[in-house]
Length: 432
Ligand code: UDX
Figure 1: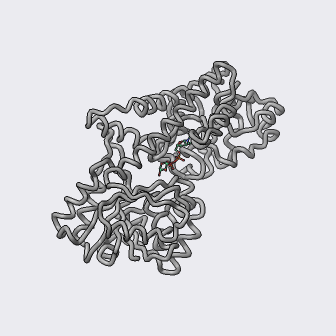
Figure 2: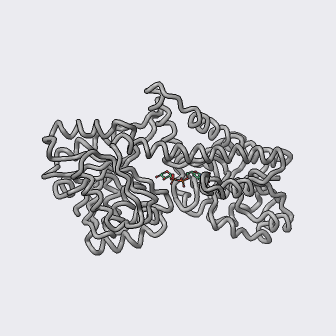
Figure 3: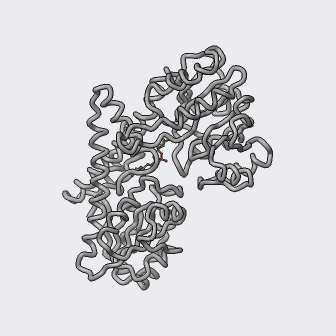
């Protein structure tokens, strides 16, 4: 099948590489020339485990191509996938659909022969109708179908999730379009395909992300209670997760959820609900609770060093979670921004997200080249992202490098016993 993907971000690029690996001919289009030049020269533009290898293989085999021009991919395509960003509007917090609508009107000009246009970007209910209306202005209605094909890839695990999705949701009333999408995923034999209306499909994506955000907010509040009553959140989560109605995933207490999806999608869902005079109190509470949590975590780090004159803070982790170089809406970055206001020297380190963090934090912090450099002379080590590298912290060495032996582990990943054995005053989330 000939596929054209519009947008080469965290959804478009792994999907494009995945479809090429499945044997389809893929052309990825992006307006960003520097990105396209880099991809054409064999340099992958974002970090995803296992992506580079597959990307290079399919680029060399000629199954994936990159261009800035719609005419290089759209006319030949059986399927055009819209995978452009839908950021939060800075004022209203609704999903900004300008990139989707601009892409749809550009695509429309170049369509040739019957084409399915599938929206993978997370878009509010009714966006498919608008995309259809935009394309209808240029092309006759019987030459295209607009389908909702939400993407559930997690950053950091995008390659794995592409090949092993829990489900494939296809929102369309068209039998012809549904048949094409079924063919697209013919090799995904273990993943169920759910056929729904376009509007249900659009809402499934928001409702899923918001549900997971609520689940995280819930376990974070339970973690607070654990600290008050002397219970351990890891044990509570384990016990809850063994109930198959609840499930064990997304019950890790931490500094709050972040990333390019949960914060933006929860806000957009609430906006949509408000527009329709429909109440989403749980999601609303998760949004405000998550903001409060980041402040609370910053205060926790501060209070650990309040007795120290001119304390120095070492931050381990800036990405919004492990496995990614992305720190958009990262709780770690927000916590560091709060700490900066206290005018303390802060040294930060992340194995993958330093470039992204530099854009957000500028010259207000020191950037270390290693975990050891970050903790040197520190009065408190704060772990904000759950990287495996941090789990391998050499406590013996660290105890000689630091000035004060205090650890605030906001991801519950370090070894309390080992830390205490080496004289560290160790604090984590949801347990004494
Ligand atoms: C999410 C959805 O999982 C994915 O299906 C969708 O396509 C895009 O949005 P992603 O943003 O990559 O994926 O990250 P995810 O792994 O879901 O984590 C989101 C945030 O929640 C991170 O900040 C993470 O640290 C936090 N989190 C997750 C927790 O704090 N605890 C958990 O138990 C799980």
